[in-house]
Length: 437
Ligand SMILES: Nc1ncnc2c1ncn2[C@@H]1O[C@H](COP(=O)(O)OP(=O)(O)OP(=O)(O)O)[C@@H](O)[C@H]1O
Image (tube, protein in one colour):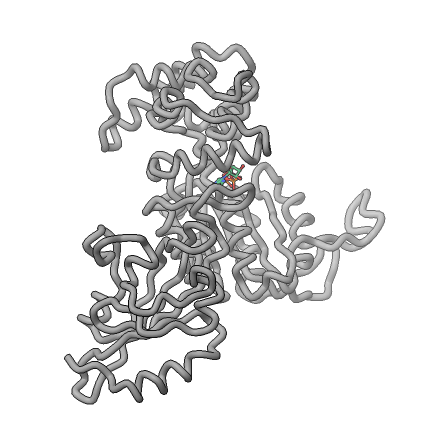
């Protein structure tokens, strides 16, 4: 393989020097040949370019290329396809580990062989890979897949559907998507579609004119109008009454609506993000959700993993949540307590973990959370048979955990739901599904 002549490399480097995005030039053996000004500022140690170093050593502190360390290597793929590749990696940076969007382009020589690569990097601000006091944190593969999807969807206008169990961070993801989009300066308007009657839903979403109904003493602007120039987030869209779904469809398709009691068609320009924990496709099949609306809202579906699907993230989440709950007084978690936390299956996901930690830290007089500070269901989960993959075993575990919580919890169902990090409705649904109601 011929390397580009040094004059060619120099021309390329001088072209890239003033690119605003951090960029490096690599040879085919993973050596960094050059790094531009933006790279030195953002990723260079003491603003120095790591010329001559291997990229996997600099970015990952690996001794071998990424693909030999179990990660996707964009260079390997681009050398096979001779086409650009883009991946989300966790890079070692002067600020600690960070999610980085890596875009790699092969430079071909006159024989069509790859002679060098240009790699552009951008720090992902939507989520952190190290403990953080706010926003999304995570680094497990299932979390990275959801984050990579968010990165792809954010710059576009495409409607996004976030699907995940209660407490998986759907609202936090919607916020991150909005903040990473070109509409970040516009409003993010959250509509909770749960428990709204038809009339209430319509007046909330579209607003009403003065005198539209008894009590409408003045005009009210609806949430769709408020979202103009920003993002409209319809949380729990599976709960929208059938009769309202057609009006919602019209709003989404044409961007137009009428205030209740109004005649004038109005227009709102927003980006639509929806979320649900419900199986919308199955609801379409049984006729409780409109198929046309489903296709409209689900152009870009994103699966948000349950906490048990991203068990590697537990220590990172525990540390972040404790910082959020207790600030500088955040307690430590001892090994036995961490072992119990790691074995539990969290039907209420991150919200349930947060509630468990919020309670446990009130017992941590010596600044350490011990196993005895954790609720009974975590102890019984640890005493049970080891969890094995597979739906039936998982269902059995969840059933045992919920049955135990029901038996030992002293408060009301609504307090139990809060304790488990579930909404009351979700708790009732789970109990019904698991035959415990
Ligand atoms: N990846 C994450 N990193 C940090 N915190 C998280 C993460 N995911 C969820 N949380 C926290 O868990 C709690 C629940 O998150 P959120 O309300 O976004 O979930 P949800 O899926 O919208 O829940 P629901 O379906 O019940 O409305 C919040 O306190 C949120 O900050």
